[in-house]
Image (cartoon, rainbow, N blue to C red):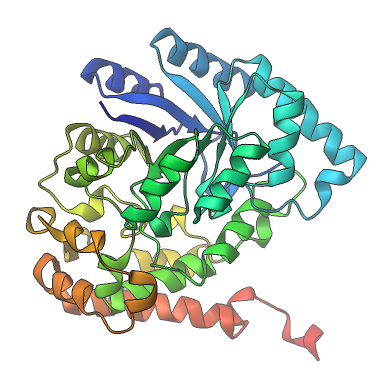
Length: 384
């Protein structure tokens, strides 16, 4: 039976509903808004917590047979990890994470994997998808460093040959992120995660964060629907294809999302069936002003408010057989010539074009504000 690793938003109802419905959730993962190491989401979009709240929720998870994994997956600490003061804070935080009963941690930085393995061996270490594990040899290296589980680079989600070889080559649990709506081989992805990492660190500058990558990614996908089909999300119905190659654990993202949205994804992926709009259970195709940051949120809020939920739909009932092509296709080298995803976009994606164009005009205006510097509210007098 497949198992799910699910994003947690610090709402106990998630635990209650998972238990009540007997969903196959192995663990929840989350963190405080800010940590010394940082994570894959800026603190500004994460729920507020307290140490007591975190500990109480972990106790409740354990009482119901569910593990908890603490996310510490920033890709960069700017070298702060080697400064005595920050290093001490980091060690103290890891001690606390261990003492309150966390079962494991999600980590990106190799040095921290070795450090945690040596100093906190009771914590299981899962390598984050941010580490971009996209080759068998890289997976083996991370196993050697101390990892017991790996969430591979989401960009290889449809490379069945590589995933199967990765399963065979290591003893690590391979945990696939299914709900990622990032552009295929996204040029903004590494930059985005670096921004998020620094914007979630206790010594960082949260006000420095801007959602340039998200804004650009949104424009690119909604301008060309073929890009939506190229994204490496996994349909609930396609989980059996991955079980056939030995993958049993699957990850659902969205710890910034409301409980109802997370549960909708959990239900679909638990049942391996979904008859609705795939955009509703995958991150990256619907936005709210409080989740996107352009500095003061005014311009982005206005843009997002032009988005009408029914105007963009990926009809999951029309995607039967879509995954089969990828078992033999070499997307890395053939994507420039292939029209497969464009053809499926015509079959499965619908939108209200007028509303979409209004939305895109608004988002392009926000983007122009960033790249022209106008949106940064720089005092022109001081620039002279």
